[in-house]
Image 1 (tube, rainbow, N blue to C red):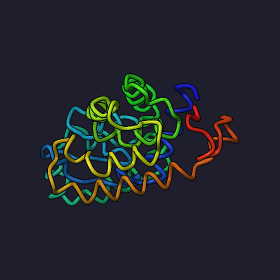
Image 2 (spheres, rainbow, N blue to C red):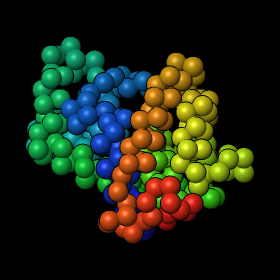
Image 3 (cartoon, one colour):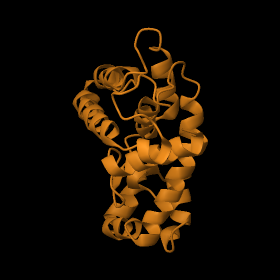
Length: 207
């Protein structure tokens, strides 16, 4: 699979699994008083969340604003509805495709032995947490684990990512569930018909 194909499947996986959120998701960022929005939880106030809003008619109303300001003015539902419009969903698809191709794929290409298509896509679905953390996390483990095994890479994320990401025990259970759900999604997707990748389980390196 080439970079564009990998990016497309990573984006499809992030949307289909809903691991980051739905099209209309809005929450307060864990890093500060600004909104995290949509299927990739893009953050506002100067971040890519504001870029997303610039693609949507009416989005300028919410750009550069604190989460608390939006909430206390009773405008959260209005923002959610805006993100969930056909234009809002399409804007998210465009921005996510850009993120996957320009950011996630190049970072993952730097990980030694991450050359199985399904394992690559699996890792890519974790990249919205931080593509740099995912890259370093896997690079630090490539000599100890088989990154060409989907089961192994699932177990590595399930058991160790909360440690590698430095987020603490509070995220352990959530990341374990995410690891399992992402595994079942990636194991089931058809990469044979569109790309000629061998059926899952029939080849060690399907790329």
